[in-house]
Image 1 (cartoon, rainbow, N blue to C red):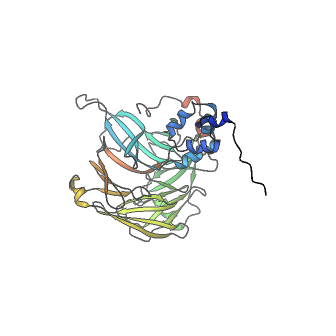
Image 2 (image 1 turned 135 degrees about the horizontal axis):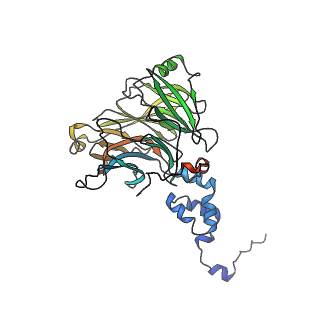
Image 3 (image 1 turned 45 degrees about the vertical axis):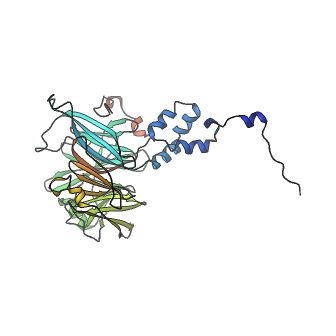
Length: 399
């Protein structure tokens, strides 16, 4: 049996240095997928080959899925110094990356100061979906992609009368719908509008149980509809006070409401998150040193399991927190715990070790239930805008 001959490259080719441009497209794509969104945009200016790779929709979808989920925080910051007396505020949306302890400014509205004791903030983050944010400022509703800085106004609803409760994708990959309601007396009527359309349709939970239909008709104070958590395409809301052990779910495929029962006591500091592809709940008391994580092991049959309990050094927290009032939230699948003590914030790992303590650079910090994964995927909804909608927005300025 003859031995295979060794293939030898020509001397000139063997001496040629290996460059990144000579790498196979598959390897090049994997390298580019490791870059953050801002670097991806810069790579498009290097050469045509890189522009083609980083503009491919399949590449962008994979890149979006690999972005770390970032919990969104909102706060306000005074413009100018104390002596300027400008009465102007920056309403800011930022994301925190617990791997680097870096804050990333995503959006900013600049406007006049307001009396927080008399009314709600004129700025609200309503939802996050597929790298998009649904936000409102002074009764104007905006949909934006903070990564690409594309935006549009959403109409309806009329925020003077309507309450926005969620954003979700439906049917076509670029079709997004807004769920909202209007109160009539003691009841609520829910509506749906498609982003980019001026029409809305009223929906009723016709396929829901009688108890849920009655609850939706009369309304309830136990559910904060302004704090949705999007999981596997469905919207989820926790009860506000913890008196009910039921999560309200809006099935975005059938566009109907239903219950999700919880077989344990939900405390007054509870939040939802996604861990290992499953719905999970962080559960603790105000001022507690312990926080539990529950995992919905079987979504269809509503089977919950207690995953673990994290105990923090309460004496260490009390040194900087006034009135023994703080809030514990598990905010990542790695077990990162964020402690909000109003003036101080703490980052602990799941073993109770303090990793970082910091102060928000503004005031009225709000740890939202919304999670953002940055996306460079082009959305058709931004490409079919009328020219009349393209006025200079307040956000994105100075980021």
